Amino acid sequence: MPYGHYYGGSGWLGVVLILAIGVIVIAGVVTVAVILLRRYAKPASSHDDALRILNERFARGEIDKDEYEERRASMRS
Image (tube, one colour):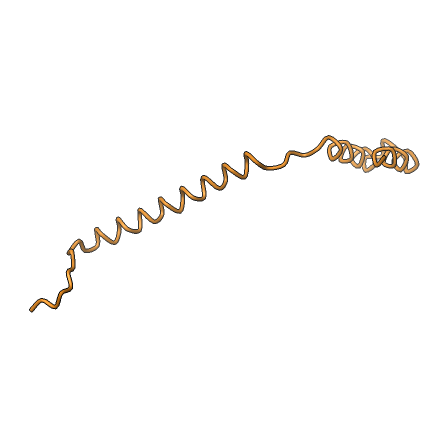
């Protein structure tokens, strides 16, 4: 006796297809987000690179504290 409900009868194949489509859509959204983030990410400025190199030179002992502070102060201005 029909009560106005229709069940397509696709069974497990329908469930698997719906899940696969969901995974594909989510993967597509994540892929687009990663591409956009990589494209529009702010590149490091040359000031950041110079300060990083200065810090590394100080850490290795190539320059003393006075020279480090002098060069760091000159970068700020």
